Image 1 (cartoon, rainbow, N blue to C red):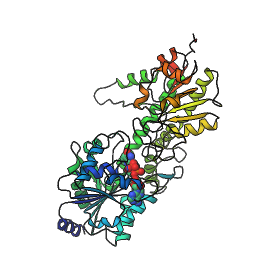
Image 2: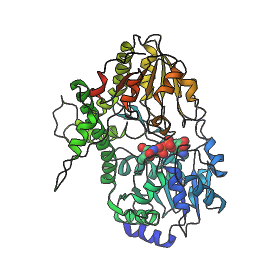
Image 3: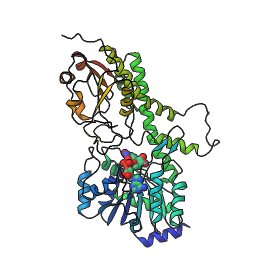
Image 4: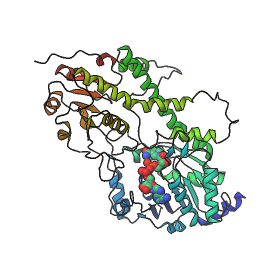
Length: 484
Ligand SMILES: NC(=O)c1ccc[n+]([C@@H]2O[C@H](COP(=O)([O-])OP(=O)(O)OC[C@H]3O[C@@H](n4cnc5c(N)ncnc54)[C@H](O)[C@@H]3O)[C@@H](O)[C@H]2O)c1
């Protein structure tokens, strides 16, 4: 069976033309790096001409990146491969027929997290479009993060249905999950090890051939398609769990009146043979496209195997789901800190003006998907506060679900604020000077709530601010400074 595929691939020769479906945070850097490999003739960035993302096609073809956060090297590489004629973006999926390999980097969100229902509509549409134009001997790779079982299940079935070809016989099929973080997309793809899992050995081998030339420091780790799916979803689940552990401990430290960061330094100091106490940082909540959903992909993967597959007491939520719930609680905790600081300043949430700093979910990025700032914004407004939002990176014209009036004018947003609430650790907020912020707020006793540990509490408390910070039990109970 695989002999036929091996012959087809041999007849095709080395991979020269590549298609990448989905021009987003993952697809764009991946496509550009493929295009920069010597011997690659052309890379097509396949982007559907949708209402929200269609604008990217023209931008990319003009050498301008639609990703507006700090992405070292990305814009330069884009201009290089566009002007060399090695990369172009198109909504014409028929060009799949020209490709030796096609990868899919399409978003995979959840419709209903509680009932573990993913929204695979965009991914299914993409897979079907690949299938419709698939030719014998092509390699298809899913790079999107997917529920374990999807490559050998849904993807294989849709591709076979649309193409009339057979996976493992007429075309190769693999999962090679992307492991990048925004802010270091190119570096991560080049330097992280690459997990590659084919549905059979020939598929894995062809996928290794696709990714090897892009890696500078990373190595390829081959495994099965399902093992690759579990690896990806579990690595994000573990990160979410480790953040939840830090958040839970931060809440304990606040309750006990101690500084989380002292405790963290203490725990982290225990090193030695076989000892590891990796401890992350607490914060105002977890956002982004990936960490907010990948736990549910993993859960769904095991639940789809049926009630008898997993030995687990039915009345206890998994450790992973509990971690998600802890992280989802943090914006509500931020509101509680804001309320308590306002009370110390003699004010209430109702009628107060809040300056919310940082709409992106991560520092120095424009990525605002599932930002924890949003539930805070909604809850604060429901409590009667007037919330003005500042972000130096997020573009109100292209970011989804941006609050009305989101501004890049920091002074304007701080003007007249009763409370300054930091949600993202953008570099612009690290240099905030208490006395200047106080002048802009226009009151002697404003409030500062630090959700990312970016300000030094004493400097703010000294000039009269009511301060609250995640994990800062040592300072949250401070007495208010007498105003001269
Ligand atoms: N963002 C990250 O840092 C990151 C990291 C690792 C893995 N991932 C995974 O990679 C996948 C993609 O994530 P992303 O952040 O790049 O998403 P994204 O939303 O930034 O990009 C997806 C792109 O695909 C396009 N698209 C959707 N359906 C399409 C279709 N049928 N045909 C052509 N184009 C289509 C969208 O319009 C969009 O431009 C997800 O599964 C995600 O979980 C993301």
